[in-house]
Image (cartoon, rainbow, N blue to C red; front, side, top):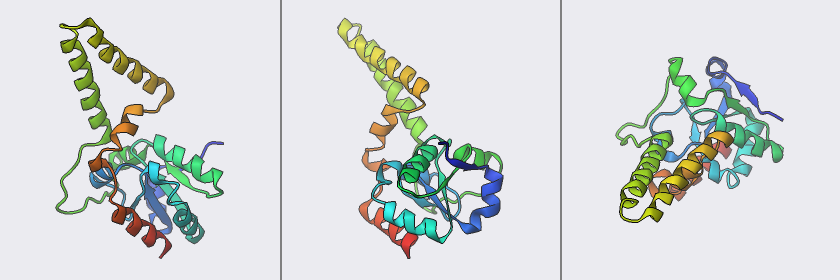
Length: 187
């Protein structure tokens, strides 16, 4: 079953009554998020289930990511646990394109968005494979592997490289950050 979705305009009109959960990496979240949004990266969703269940009982849950893909995945995972949530159609990309406000903590360095990190990593690996392939033909397999991964990513609308990059320290929430977020949802 497809998750319930709200357009950016619908979400903006109901923002005061929704608990907004941003499932992007902390780096993406810091680059700009919906006002009042809480950051719970997708790979920490299971740890957050009790807090999300409590927040859902207080009002509606709106799950947000950059495009709507990760938030739809999160909504399905929550539905499997009996928690109802809506996804933001088009994600923060659609939100900002329509001119709705975003919040960015003052004094924070703007980290690169995940798609930019993926492009850098993929391009670097392909280039490395091609350059090393001039000395050893077998090194070209690196480039072929990345190309195959990108095709698979497009066909499945998932990204294995993003999952790997999300595990880097600058893309991970600090333990206290996540604990503070969970406490704020249940408080």
